[in-house]
Amino acid sequence: MPKAGAAVAGQTTYVLGSIPTEEQYEGSVMRRMIPVVAWVAFCGVLTIGAASAQDKEELAEANSQANTQWEQLLTKCGESYLYKGDKYAALHEYRDVSFEVTPRPLTEADKLNGIRWAGMFSLQAKAVRKQSGFSKEWSKWKDGGLLEFKSENVRGKWRFFRRQFVFRWIPVNFEKPSCDLVKN
Image (cartoon, rainbow, N blue to C red; front, side):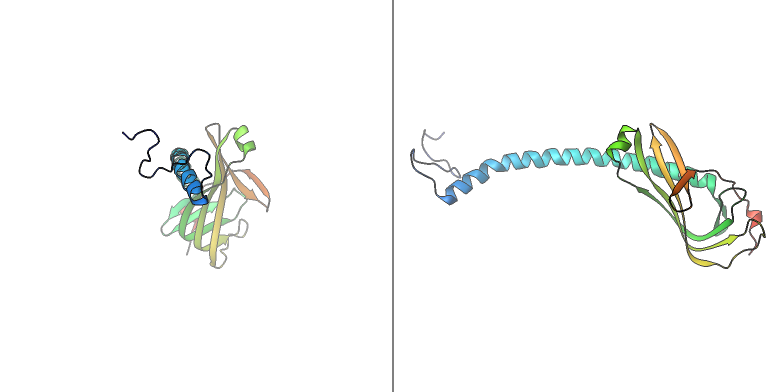
């Protein structure tokens, strides 16, 4: 144990009444700040870790809901997926598809309104064609294709909306198509 007033390795000592040099002052401040910075960083990691675990859990639930929704909306026919919005809509045939769930950040208003998760469920296709609801004729295949649904978990209940026009979203109402409707 060092004697009172003796310097310990790594410790800066000052003579009473003297003014420390800039290097001495900066060094002593930095040594005192290291434990504080470490504690703040540790608490931040705990908070981020907890948020990440919650985000992962919510994203897993959203993925599960997306899979359920896609199973209800789409019909798999060979290499294609069929979608028909409602009885008056055109039948869409999508090829070479991928599915994506994209969360969006919740606002304070969202949270106050009970929204636990919000985002988009998307189907992206390399090719798409449509069958007219009236003439039943198929269009030519076109590159690309996107089908999106807005989704929200409000107080534990999932809601799904489809785009109608550019800025309007309406609740999902659909007619699941049959593979009998597809002719190459």
